Image (cartoon, rainbow, N blue to C red; front, side, top):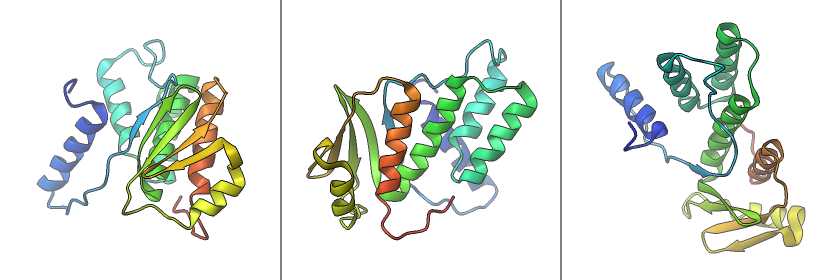
Length: 177
């Protein structure tokens, strides 16, 4: 598991289970998130490694807001109040889902900004004008990616700004929450 990464491990495990059940597997682009945000399950919150792996897997497999809400409800029912690190982990799952919908394949933190790398075949060029108006000189477009300048350091602010940017990529579309 350490060699392929946890998200990839969960995805492969899910595919094997679906294949064994005879369910058609729909390939989807994996979104890489590389930002300096504390997003993990603390040992003080869940001590059992097996339970931790189960919760990590449940979060990694979320594809809709309903899935995410079900996982949140399960965590609260089983373990109590959710610490901020786990809230951040759940927010990263939301961000991955949004990024997948707008054709972003990687989000990474660089110096004082966030870089969004687009899948050129899925990129919505109609969103460029909207984004340029909304962010002005804080946003720079280059072929295949955009860089959003940020000076915030709090996890919640960084995640909120990323989520807001992703939501701004939608032009007259309904979000499947």
